[in-house]
Length: 327
Image 1 (spheres, one colour):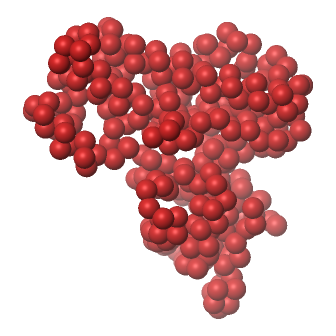
Image 2 (cartoon, rainbow, N blue to C red; image 1 turned 90 degrees about the vertical axis):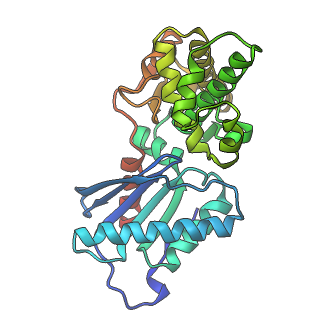
């Protein structure tokens, strides 16, 4: 994809030598500002920053670009470095198609965020961070879920990332939603008893089951994903229903890796060699996260290797911004 050139928008701004990066998803966004050597000068974390796909592409891109421009301006002021920066890479969940990337990139260029702008998906930034231009698989599971891999020929393959309606299996959203449904079935006698009901009602801030109907009309995807910790805790406490929800999430995440490794080996048979590396990231799979050890254990049992270094999409986006600055 082409990179946007912002300098021609007005032709008067002095472009900074600093670079910026943002890695955004349905729950949080992480920003980095670095000098041209790559030395990080500032790290900032904010709330969700993604393209939810609920409104027309241009409308969503304009809204997100406005928010990102304000945040980059705020962060840059802390360093006494007003916009435009030298280069910015924005890695965003929901930007998997060229249409979304181009719309957001154009909107950021118009706002003069940087002399050079690149928009990519969060998984592409994670892949760059984990492997550079080398081969391997990245599995991300947080609010949503997706896997992406690069084969020995440099071909990029993707599994999942279809959103809440069509995909996101094994994600925080899926765990929260399945937990809610299981709790309702248990309360009505359509399923086994579970302690999830009372816990999830408290987490939703309601007192009665029938209040969940009105609540469900307003809640967003990240709101559903916020229930995942409740389900995971219940599973750890021995609740069999919650445990079943978590087991299915692990199986779904492993299915991403299996399907991706098959696709990569078909494209280039050498990619299927023993020891292919899998990097894990996202709120459910980061170091210390609730599903990392389980997923890593099963992946290792299949002859694949878990990357030692945690995946950092913001670091990957910063690397792409530096490449962009250097031309």
